[in-house]
Image (cartoon, one colour):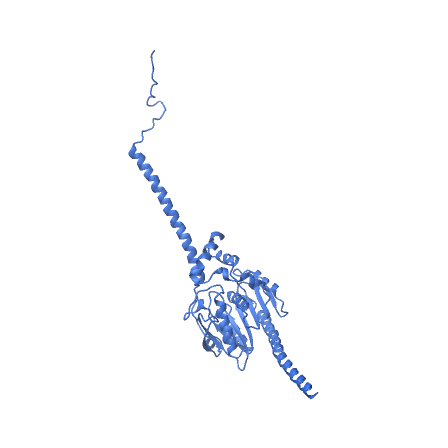
Amino acid sequence: MTTMSTPLPLVGSGTAIPAPVHPSERTRIQKLGRVSLHLSYVVFSILLLLFVAFHAYVAWALSHPPVAALASNPMLAKNLAYSEVTFASADNRIQVDGWWIPAESSQRTVVLSHGYGANREETWVPMYDLADLLHGMKYNVLMFDYGFASKSHPAPATGGKIESQQLLGAIQFARAQGTQELVVWGFSMGAGTALQAALLSAPVDAMILDSTFLPDDDTLYFNIKHYADLPRYPSLSLIRQFFPMMSGARLEQLPSAEVQSTAYDFPIFLIHGTADDKAPTYLSENVAKAQTNALSRLWIVPDAIHEMIYRTHTQEYVQRATAFLDNVHSDVLAKLATPAEDKAGSVIAVQLKGSA
């Protein structure tokens, strides 16, 4: 029996003959694959590290905002006599610098609470104009720097956690000057800080709060989106992790929900613009809904932007604010008179009882 072998295809028959892979070339291909895989791991690790480091930088930037140096003073700006003052925060953690602008023979004081990223001058509000207005109404005025704005006693920004202690120190200082009627006038985070101080039983008679800002997940992401298109997760989680390292305070410690749901025992005048792109209008609306004091007011200004309502609606702003202050003053006078009347009534009653 004859066995026939299958003939090999002829060159040019249309069938390609695979070239044999030599061991050295196979090793080279495997090595190249391993190098590519390792390189991918390295690139991924670098990108992940940069992503995490960026969020660490965001946390640092949030707690250390750039703040301009003081450019003027009450005398230069408005011809208001003043004195440089320094006082301790309520928890004695930091010294606070400020200006005390006295009104002659006055026991009424307004403490101005500036916003985030600004100092006591906060020129866009503008603070000097308000100080001049208040001084003309016979109010003493206290302007001071929060720690994040201080050049001599710097401290990180904490969203109001530590700042509320600094505001309480300012209130205590004003009371020590003989103040019997005290109003806090706050802007943006300075307004939110005022409400946090109120939760700590700040001894105030009223508050005016303009463009109130309170840090929480929603408002933080609301602001971060203006600067970087970051995903909500894991960005907020990473920032929360890094923030305590940069500031010494945890964002979870900020009582944003409690601030918005508390009925305070003093009147509040809340002012907010519908076009505010930094502090959502619902923050002021929520605070207003919780109030029970008959003198409390809410003014929502159509198309007004963050902290610019005084500039764009000056006449109405001044009219509403001064009317609120006048009502507060009348209320305080009534409360101050009541104990005296009760005391006098008690004395008369004792005398009548003795004569009987």
